[in-house]
Image (cartoon, rainbow, N blue to C red; front, side, top):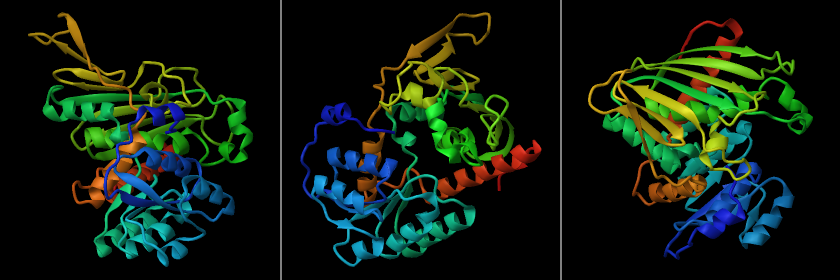
Length: 361
């Protein structure tokens, strides 16, 4: 998710009294995007910046806020109302727990941690300190996803039978100049899959089993370039997800949702969800159904939803954080949600080694 100048200019920054003061910890790719989102939020304002890289002080000067080299330094000065932690995954536990112990709510970038044990410690700290923990799966804050969720929950699609998710894209040679991307963890499973796991759980409920197969036949690197994952849901719904970074195609969430202006918008869909009364596709949002008798011999119609493509998901997410801090809402993506996504991903990795069906604990 990248916020460009056009997006910023599209948003009317109405002044609101007593904005929630939020610090950003870690100014990498996502941290810098959170800075932009905060600058246009109607409910929040940037409190300070924390980063081990002293060059990040340029961001603090740009936004005219204090700069700190550590969370300890921040906490010993003027405490913020909330914090966004966007440091590398291996540091999530250390930074997040330090703020939760100080009773400061945290929006933690996904994934929740680099392993399940650390994730559990983060969640336990949130519970012990009775302080909110939110996980940064920003797709849940897209207006398109909200509409799809309402359609499913309303019963308009009937009982959900199956789903198909595609993440097909082509990464060029420049992408692989970073050598870690041809090693374990650098393929589409580790980079592209995390958002899709959370989103299908949000829409379709808990996953009980996964089965995965991978291939590296195109690029022949040690890491996979293509994978197929089959999911079984507690409800009985079945879902197939195919991901590849070697296919020239318009079918991936990034290329279809319009969230990220770095990618061309294809006006296609990447998600297809089918039920006994109808089906839905998105982000090119269409609801398919029969009028009267349901039959493959009868005409099938579709309703197009007039939903504006959302470039505002990070801003929506920050506004939601403000509502949580103010007591107006409960976290849309909890620590337990983040832990469950991590468990599912772990099961997928274990399945790729054997090809067997793995139960998600």
